[in-house]
Amino acid sequence: VVVEMDPYAYCPTVVDRTTWDSADASPARFRVTHGDQKVQTLSVTGGSLSSRYPSRSEPGDGRTGTAPWTHCTDGSAATICHTNKDASPWLELYFGKAVVESVTITNRNDCCFGRLGNFQVLTRSAAADGSWSQCATARWVSRGDIVVACAAAAATGVRVQANNGISDWFNLGEVAITGVPAGTLVTVTRDDA
Image (cartoon, rainbow, N blue to C red; front, side):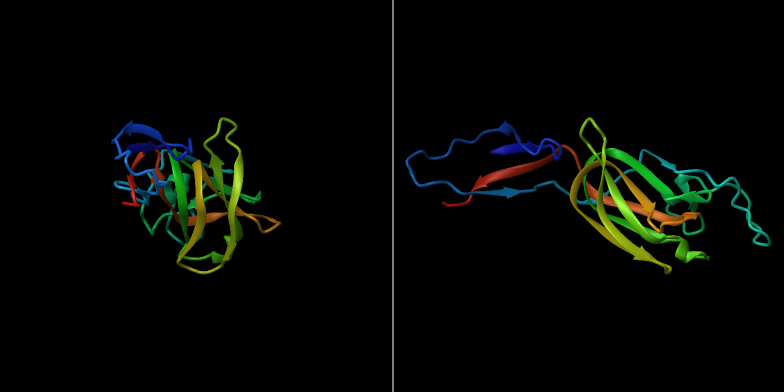
């Protein structure tokens, strides 16, 4: 039996049926094989910040320009996304329907590591209400990456939000979301023969 599994429906749709030998009256056990299911970096199709830092220029650093959300998904260690000083600032990234496995956050690498501090990762439900649910909380005040597991949450977006209890700037180097896109094929085979 080949079925198409939509991670948002949580029930398979039969695509092709194979007839089993009905002479065996014992209860059947089946094995699910995720044939072409691949956990992958999801393609981000949109995003936003709680506010936009108007200028990336800092005295004496020679850099100018803004720091939009796209700088957190461009694959460059030389760019960051940056908010103004907000209460509980955040970065939201959107993608097509997928089951989110993990979120990798790369902190800013040139300074200000503590601005990430205590944070939470939320996933946006694929349901019509689009509600946000917390998948994890963490603390990171250093350079480098932190990987946050999301326990296979079905979603259309991810939010990384500061949870420091104060108004502050929020800046990140990169954010990558891994998961399985909707519409993945799975194969169900009889496993008790």
